[in-house]
Length: 459
Image 1 (cartoon, rainbow, N blue to C red):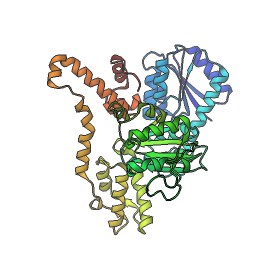
Image 2: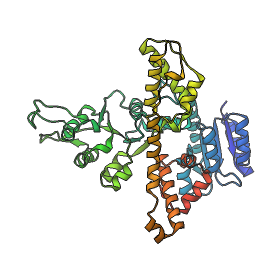
Image 3: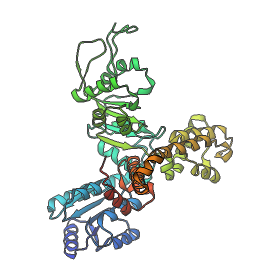
Image 4: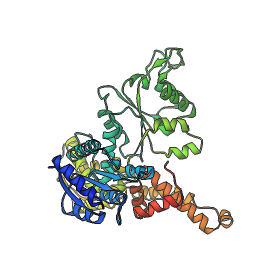
């Protein structure tokens, strides 16, 4: 039987929902405040939480934050009589399944509850399944959010941009979106923008006709023609020149292309998934990337977390890569020593998942027994130190010069720096306030206060 936890400080609302949901066949537990609800969650599992937002003590938004931190796949529906766009945006960004205002329509809340419990069953069955998402391994809260985003955006035609450092698996996510889309039987065509010379990029994207330039000995279809009715994956999109960006914008706006050397306009219907390890907002400010193109591409942004931010997935990945490369190399390596695993858990993986796979492949190749020992693990410590410095650089760049410090005063400069650091954390967390608070190592409530204090708007 599906179990639902109701949290509301009003007795009448608890009684109403309890009676309503009992009649629908649900098992219902009701609590009057957030603190008792959290204790209840520790004592027994639930399939859904329905909570009021405005409550004494732990309010609904704080309860949502705590639930998503400890039980990331548990759906939460928030209910309130005080409709606030700000609260609604905060709730959805922090992982609420839905946001309903009182007085609500009974049929509407029944429908939302059915949808939420169905999603919970689906997520519990295959949140990190290799069958659902081939090659994407993980059960950490960060990866469960990625899986949820894939499932939600894949059936739509919306363009997607995937942010992430090199080696985090951006192309695997792009493939998963295509495989779960409504055009999965149509082509998925990838192209790495940085790997193609600038003078050939237009031809690679839009095709060319015979004789259009030296070496064009026959007509050639471009990326968008090959991917027509399917998905085009543009990796390292930030490397495109301004001229090509302009032509790409026309494809997105008009859904048409003109091959190099041709006077014929061709219609195309292509979903674009782009990926980059650059900060495109900073590229826009620097004048290297078109703002209008950015908004066309970034309808749905997905941020792939670096491996150092999801260390809990390292053991899963290690065993997955051990099995994969043992089979490929004809070995029978099945285990890794406890000390060897500890070495990996203490490592920052500047090359992310790709580097971990390389480490395990090397370990499998070098071992003569069925267990990987620490001496077979080769870690790039000099790269780790360089990456640490690189990650910190943007924060140091925000510090004012000595002259500016004396003109503005210490307090104003420190406030400005704190505001920039919070913006940086929100950007790194794909605008998830819960994750940003974790990155900053402050409470969710403190972050909300600072966002309000500095009037930080959503990017």
